[in-house]
Amino acid sequence: MTKFISALPLCAALALFAPAHVFAQTTTTDGAVTVTTDEDATAPTAEDLLSLGEDADPAPVAGKPYTREVIGSWEMRCIKGEEGSTEVEPCQMYQLMNDGQGAPVAEVSLFRLPAGGKAIAGATIIVPLETSLPSQVTLAIDGGKARRYPYAFCNPIGCYVRLGLTADDVAAFKRGNEAVMTIVPALAPDQKVELKLSLTGFTASYDKVSVLDQ
Image 1 (cartoon, rainbow, N blue to C red):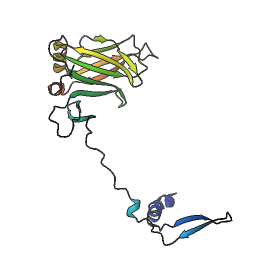
Image 2: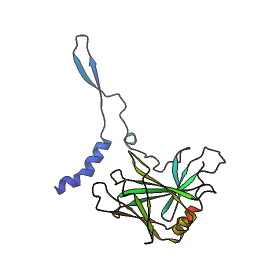
Image 3: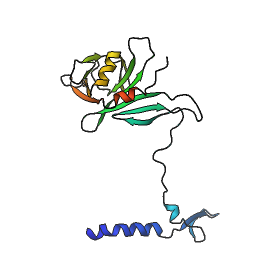
Image 4: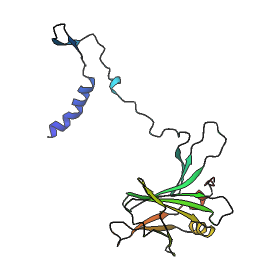
């Protein structure tokens, strides 16, 4: 087994640089098929068989979301403007929450609202489809009193919560270290899933968030 494994690199090299033959198939008038080797055809070179790769981080495309920067635990998700445009790109705060083992479970996007209303900011939360809708979502900051929010709708991506944040809510997020969001599985209504939302970098991110156009 050791000899077989050690021979693999050599076999790979021989396969890469071995001469290639081009086979041509022709059919005669009586229907017979003959296969011939075209020795004069140009065989691919070693360079032809190699990939030069491609940019793993392509430039943002106009009209599409991209991550402009990461501030603490938050991404600044912006919509790329047209080339040469002087308009400010709209940006939201974004964070992906996991189950504590690294598996993504829910996501939060936060934006500011125009002045004059009771809510000064809004957020969209997306959770998995098989979540108990009657149980709603609860959110508590640093072990404080939890608030409950209803689900607005579901689609193939997941179930959505659209919540409004007052000035007091935003101030609590700025002071806090961590929020805990609790959801209930539809197939296990007696259980609760607690997801941690880090508030590191919240204040600096919030100051860069765009006001949602009406």
